[in-house]
View (spheres, rainbow, N blue to C red):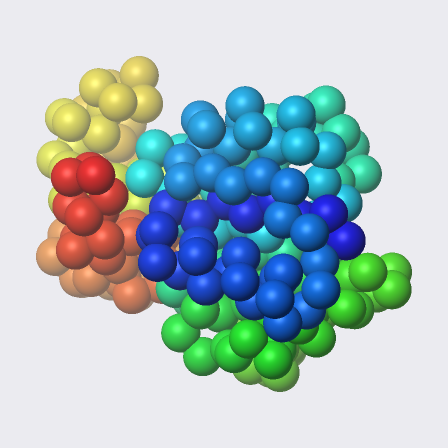
Length: 219
């Protein structure tokens, strides 16, 4: 297969390239270390498969995929991530991708299995992913089943943490409206304070870990 790799960590990008070419016998036709670079490199490379990190320093990886599919609707994608939480699970489910690899637990062998499956017209999701998906589908109290899209956005900003006034300014709402949403979120999730809400947002993946945000910003 002709493969394009979008991964901001240079060392891991090198590992992916060598695994795809030297060990698996595919051709890497393009590489990018950021979302904006990917929007230039990938359309010109015309890959059969996009290996895409969900968390990029300048753009959300799934936004990158949406932009690319406007030009090439049938582009196949294998997502990779260092984080696998409820929010990541939900987003992968909605993205219509062909596979997912957890960088923290999966191996080059599984990368090969994933690419081979996709090359053959199938999909590849590791056992931990499918188990988490089953557990999530059985959980009536999962946050994405209780909260609206607007409430999820506000909760993610509470986790940053931002004040009601800062959230209001960012979303074009009044502070009073944000406060009302925030109390509805707390009621639905059984949370008792703003600090507890912020911890929940980080735990479920609505807000990315602070160390990762600061590292990406520095880059």
